[in-house]
Length: 194
Image 1 (cartoon, rainbow, N blue to C red):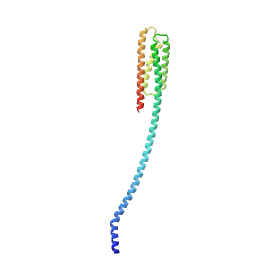
Image 2 (spheres, rainbow, N blue to C red):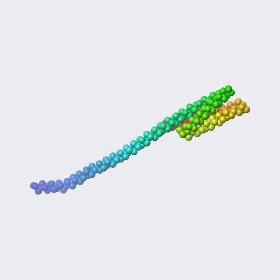
Image 3 (cartoon, helix red, strand yellow):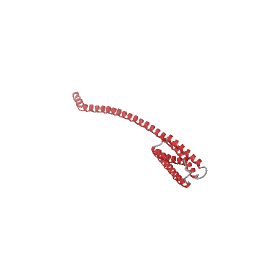
Image 4 (cartoon, rainbow, N blue to C red):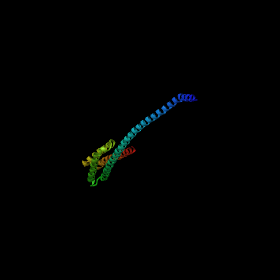
């Protein structure tokens, strides 16, 4: 009976032990693989977290620069617009002073408002885009020619001839101011949409 017991144990040993050991080895290999995979996943997660933090920092920096740019550009447009309003008011006063004695004062006021606008446009030029600069440059050229003509008024021209020319140029100035207003509005709308 003891021999039979030993034979059964030997048979079990031969049949089941190799498959048992093989399964045990597979489980051990699986545990090692899982550990290695987990370690690789942690490294990738760490790398992605660092990259995500870098991107967030970059985005925050860009947002700050964009906000600062918007604020500076908006303030510039406010200054330009205030100056354009003064030019437009001086222009209207000048247009309404066709023959009265205060016309000379209105010409001086218009010229002063023109020079104030010119100063703001030149000082703030880096703070607005080329399309606004081109509109301002056109306006300044029109106003400049009007100011020069008004300062060198030829008294030999009839009042009607001079007034028709004035009205035509005044209309160009008003139209250019309106166009600038629309260009500024469009620019601000595009900045807000970003």
